[in-house]
Image (cartoon, rainbow, N blue to C red; front, top):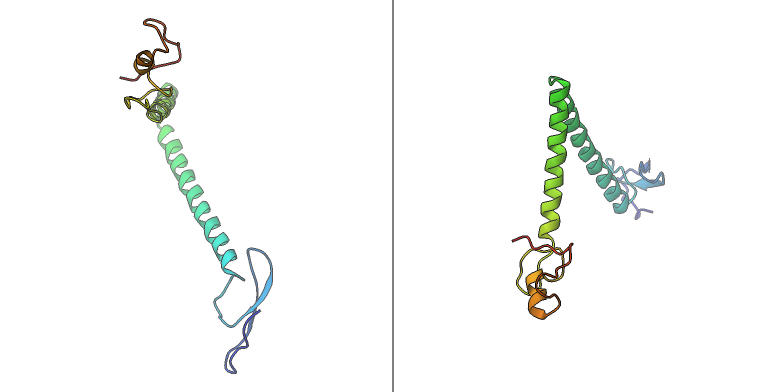
Length: 133
């Protein structure tokens, strides 16, 4: 619902492309019925641009791989997978630090700090507790 228009203002009847609601406006370029529909459309367009960018990158990769021999293409794919795995491992390793000394570990404390606290005897470390230094 719009406020009472001034005598010289024209009223435009529109249909919102996001929600399909009919609305009246005095602004000739208004497309959406509410700010929330405007925000939804903005988010949708941003997501579409993101997907388009990804598709273009994939297409460029495919075009670059068309000039490779099959063995070179396999090696490139293996190399990319290895790099992805290494990056994930780096992120996972750096995500946890020992609460006492601050060294990267996959446990609350590193094995050396657990030994200091008396949890492990010398030579009695769990197999999954690793210190990355």
